[in-house]
Amino acid sequence: QVQLVESGGGLVQPGGSLRLSCVASGSIFDIYYLGWSRQAPGKQREFVARMFNGGLTIYADSVRGRFTISRDNAKNTVSLQMNSLKPEDTAVYYCNLRKLGSQRDYWGQGTQVTVSS
Image 1 (cartoon, rainbow, N blue to C red):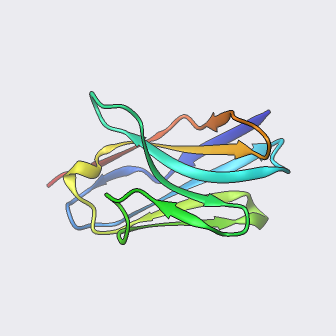
Image 2 (cartoon, rainbow, N blue to C red):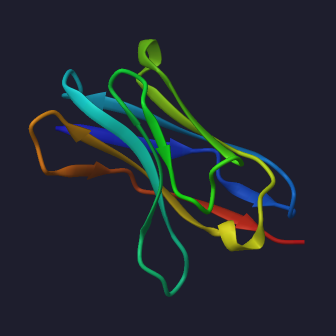
C-alpha cells in the first residue's frame, strides 16, 4: 500500500507564491515517478508536473517557468514551488505516484489552492 499526504495549500493573492509538499509512505521502494495534478471546479483533473526516477522533470505548458517540482529522497517528499500565481491556478492540487511496471496511479487526498485578491 502507498499513502500520500499533501500539505501547504491556502489562499494567496495573484502574483504570490505557495509551496506544496507531499509525503509518501508505505510500499514506495520502486517509484517510477512522483507528480502533481490539479482539478478546478467544474473541470477535469489535469496534469501539472512530474519528476521521474533519475531526475527528469516535465511540466504543463500553463505552469512551465512558474512552478518547480522537487524531491527529497531522504524524506520521501515531493514538493511543488508555485510562483507568480494566477487566479486560473485555483484548484485542488493532488500528489500522485506510479510504481515501476505498473499502470496504476496512487493519489493523495488533495489540498486546496485559491488565488484571489
